Structures are given as structure tokens and as C-alpha cells.
Image: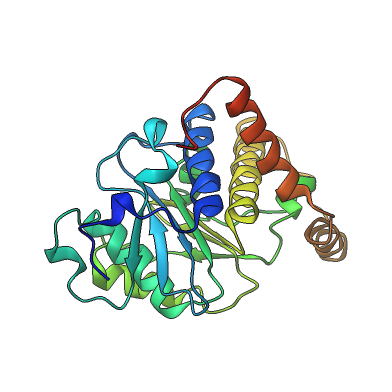
Amino acid sequence: MSVTNLRTNIDHWSERVDMAAAFRWTVRLNMHEAVANHYSLAVNEDGTQFLMNPNQMHFGRIKASDLLLLDANDTDVMSQPGAPDPTAWGLHGAIHRHCPHARCVLHVHSIFATVLASLTDSTLPPIDQNTATFYNRYVVDDAFGGLAFESEGERCAQMLSDPKKKVMIMGNHGVLVIGRDVADAFNRLFYFERAAETYIRALQTGQKLRILSDEIAEKTAQELEDYPEQAEAHMREIKALLDAEGSDYAS
């Protein structure tokens, strides 16, 4: 699959629109890293073909038509015009190559998730409903090896082999979230950042934390997993807000 004509490829339009909305809303929430960080979405059955943001384009102006369509098994991607960011290719390419369950992959250096990832103990205890959402559903990567070029991406992909673990707390780095589609992954990213903020602010009080029992934490996590159509409603409302403002994200 050539990279050269990706800007004019308008296949997978509804998926592109959701992706563009997620980029724009990430900026609105101040969870972006300017022209760094990347989102990707698998668009074929085995997950190896995926949409991703172009190299060095600010999240705040990405449109549906800007997204690259890449093939994780194309060894010539980085030598072609319009090639993606090399760290994005290293990380997202590896995940889409090895983890077919990771349909949508969102990676950011959002403030509270990154603070959590910078602690000696980066686990997230279930102290409220949002933190309980992630009970036993994340992995902590404590072997940061520098920028996510291909070897680092391959290492990270191996940590996502369990489909139940949908968040990677990337020690000394940030957070990576996977989902079945853009709505699912973005909803998870939003609530993980909220959960991390609650925990960090609770630690700042210096008071002893009230931690939920394992049983209640698991029960809460399962109930939220089964909660009907929350992610879809969240994405629908984000797009409605952007549309009402006259945003060009869907162009």
C-alpha cells in the first residue's frame, strides 16, 4: 500500500470523522502534546491496516481527510513520501501487527496519567468509581527504553497480549489505551485521565486513602464495562458540540 496518495483516500469515512473528533477534543481537554503523540484505528479484519495522524500535524487542526492509511506489514512505509512519524510507526505499527484485538490505539502524555507513570509505584488503587473502572484492567510498563522506535514498539506490543488489559501505564512516559473503536478507546482514555487526577489529588492531601475491596472494585469495573452505549453517546455528543461550533474536523 503506497503512502503517497493517502491524503486523497477517503475510504472509511465515518471512522475518519470519529478519529478527527477525538483529536480535536483531546486539545479541548488539554491532553495533547502539540505535534507529538498519535492515535490509530484498524480498518481491516486482521487489524494490520490502520488510520493514523500525519507526521508533525497539531491535534487541533487534524481533519478526517488528513489521516494516513498505513499497512503494518509494509516494510517500505518509512522510505516513502508522506511517511508517518518514526516513533508512531514503531509503536502503533507494532501493536497493529501483533495485537488484532487492539482496534483503536490512543497514546498521549496527558498530565495526570504521566504523573502516575512517573511514580515509583504506578498502580492505580480503586478509591472511587472512576479508578475502580480500571481495576485489574491495566498493565504497568516499568522498562522504559527511550523513544518508541521499532524495538521499543515491539516490546510494548508484547505487553498488550491480554485482551482484558486495555490500558498501559507507560512508566516514565505516559499512557496508551486500546479499544474496539474510536468511541470505546476515547471514552476509556477520558476516564483514565479523570481517575489518575482523582488519585494524584487524593495523594496530595496526605491523608490515608479509603480503598475499595477487591470484590467491590471488580463488581464496579464489570458494571461499567456492561453499561449500555456510554462510549457511543460520549462520541456522539463530542461531534454534536464540534458541529455546533462550525468545526471543520469532518472535512
